[in-house]
Image 1 (cartoon, rainbow, N blue to C red):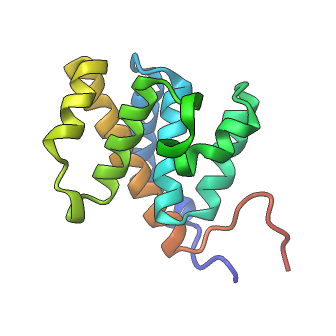
Image 2: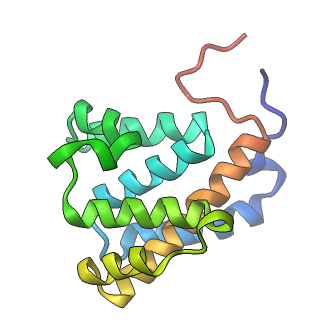
Length: 151
């Protein structure tokens, strides 16, 4: 498989706009490791190899144990590896990524309200939407993981 289009060079203004949203999420009050964990889970659901590679490495570099990173895909069955706040955020990320099937159920939103402020819920929702957009760009343009062997 080869990359189709370099979206950064083909649409610099569009990518600058997404980068602005990314910069906002990076500066907001959300815990950076929580954001990376959500980015990883969204990317797993969407099957984005480029983003899974990037966020896995970022989490490990940030100090998250490999065991926890590996269990992110099955967080609901991973025992006490994930905090209540992480579990709420991961459920929210799954619900919004699969929104056509889930319609963002009240039970998950109630879990979010128990753990996060309205601003944090909104900021996390922005982060989830952003990662879904990045996943769609990377998958459709066949962006390869940085660590992938090249032809």
